[in-house]
Image (cartoon, rainbow, N blue to C red; front, side, top):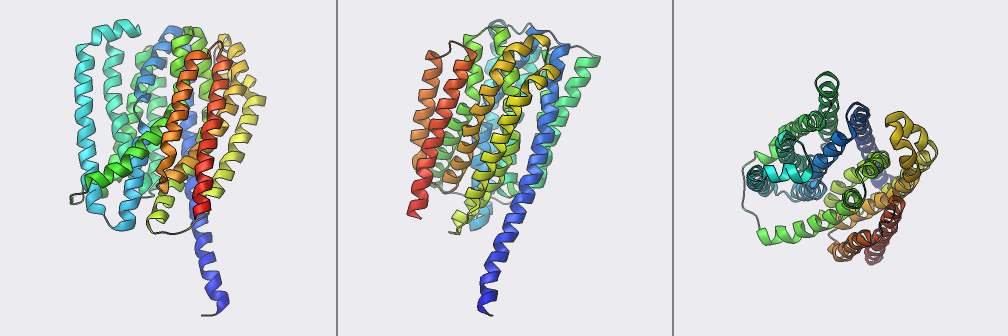
Amino acid sequence: MSVQEMTAAPTAVKEKHHLAFFRQSGWLMIANVAGGMLMWGVHFLAKRIPEEEYGIFGTLLAVTMVVPALPLQMVFAQQTAKALATGRERELSGMIRLMWMGLTALWIVFAGVALFKQAWIVEQWKLGSAVGLWITLPTLLMALWTPIFGGVLQGSQNFLWLGWSMIFNAMGRAFLAAALVLLVVGNAVSLMTGVLAGMVAAAVVAVWQSKPFWSAPIASFDWRSLLKQVLPLMIGFTAFQFLFTADTMFVKAYFTKDETAFYVSAGTLSRALMWLVMPLATVMFPRLVHSAAKSEKTNLMGIVLLGTAVLAACGAISLTVLGPFIVKFVFKPSYVEVATKVLPWYAWAMLPIAMTNVLLNDLLAHSVYRVVLPLVAVVGAYAFALTRFHASLIQVLQTLGIFGLLALAVCAWFSFGKRKRN
């Protein structure tokens, strides 16, 4: 083989991997945007139900969001990618089954307590009836199952069916919710029934497509070694999920129902930015885990970070310019004034969070677990700051933006250190 051929071969392989990456990322972007638009369509139904019922829906939906879906999915994505790279498929099968049964048992206990205390819950949350709680409980179970098997799909790089799982989730949610609100009754129960239908569809697809991994013969695995890998991942991604979502919970605690509704409407539009950029990190993570397990070098993170920054910035600019028109089109007239003022702040606060997500995925894929404690410290300080700085909705978002930048700085520091050592 000539020198030119020897040089060209790795280049061709690298280009092939990059093409596959962009093809898979492109598909997940399509699935995310399509699914996101369908889920966003549920908020059009806000015009058809009383504001009080929409507030109840927000409360019940927030309960399902307490499930650490992102950390769970990333744990199983990491373990699946590493098992496939090192030939430990039987150990992976045992881990999946054990976690599946364990989380289901935990849900049974939680559901039993919730049903025993349902009268108190209905009164405290001002639900009106227990039906919303009954529908939320199985939704929580699906919210526990979906990230397990979605993580297996991600780790095995089965992005085709991971994308379809997202789309079926959104279709079930949007179509059934719309049918119930428009044809039966416009209330929170109808909307939550749609959420349940979507979660069931997503879980069924993920369980079905990941069957070769969880139905394989099992082998024992080293619990201590597993915990050393899993705990930092769970804590790190839980901290990120808190940074990404906790502002809404604090707003509910410190502001009126109307102000919360306005804030949620702006948040729905702003978090749509993540529909565009998160697929890049989703596809990147198992590839980096696989490369790290085989001690292979890759420049994928730099490409993903640049793409995320450009897409998120373009999205923030678009929402800043077009946001007032979009708010008028989607939400009630009473939402427009406050949501329009809040929207630019919300959109730009998402930019550092999106970039933090990329760097954190890269660091944890390479087992740089030293980043976890500083990140947790930043997030803890963020939670404390929100209890002190909430004079207005804009001040809440300014706090989110500042701590998003701090989280980005922490991840950038450790990422720079990792590259310097390499």
